[in-house]
Length: 196
Image (cartoon, rainbow, N blue to C red; front, side, top):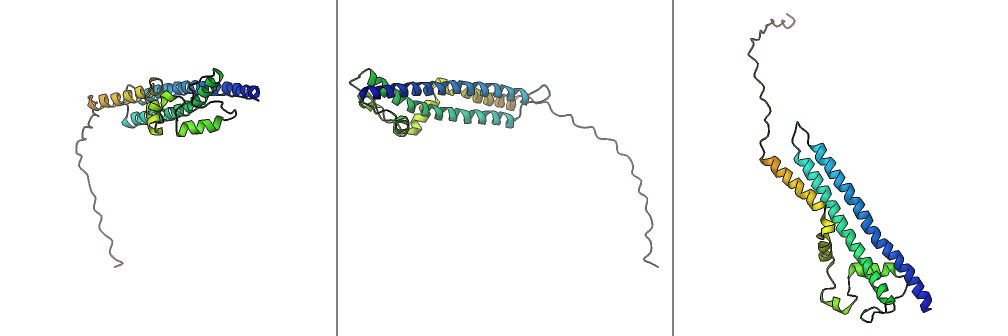
């Protein structure tokens, strides 16, 4: 049965590793869309005749914030897969320090859920910094360089453009010259008598 379990764990490992890398592939694709979309938003929001509006900058920054949050959340999902990958790797190298020995196969969701909710240590040395609150884990994921870029730069650019626009001299609309007064002729007509 051990050889069969090892075969199942090997298949599970390959599936998990593919899923883990797929998170990164999709994140890069989404980053490309957001980068191109924000450049298009800046280009459409400005032209030679007018300044970019606050609403345009706010919309671009808000969209960047939403996708930044979603990618950070996505990273926590990805890291929950990593714990199972590490357990299977330790099993195959017969690591004596792993806390979970002889893992059962076909436990992808069970491990993902436990790792996502509790993020318990897998090795003894991890007891010093695990488990971590999910919100703290999300914050740490959000501020990793490869997660916050390009979102933080887009938001910073929106703020910078807004400040520059706020303090720059804006062309004032020319005041229309008043038309000269022209006399108005009012012709009064006598009221018709009330039937008399």
